[in-house]
Amino acid sequence: MKNKNNVFFDRRTSAQIKEEADRVEQLQIERLTARRLAYELFLIQTRNAQDEQRQKEELQQQAFEHIAWDEALHLIRIAYEI
Image (tube, rainbow, N blue to C red; front, side):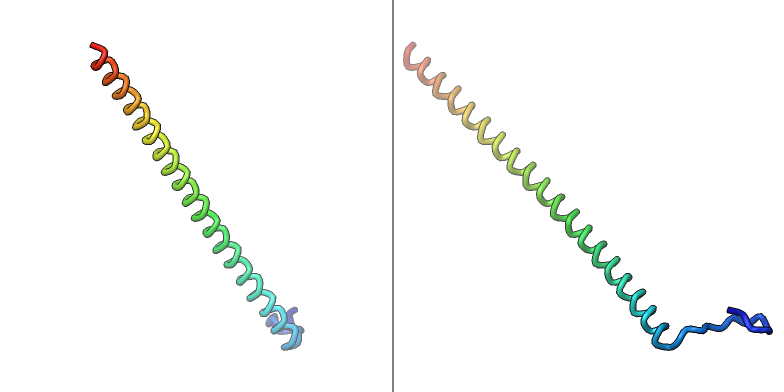
């Protein structure tokens, strides 16, 4: 609100100003908390994706080793038959 000298002044009481400041502070805390939680979720998802990829690679390696052993045993059987 302006007085006759075009100077702005606030008609709110100090309690109202403090209450509003507290609300603003609480909103800032909630926003920072939400951002932190979103970042933690991102890290968890990234970690899970990396773990899944690592497990997939390990299973592929085990499958290749199993196939290699099967082929080796097959070749040994052929060699003994000759």
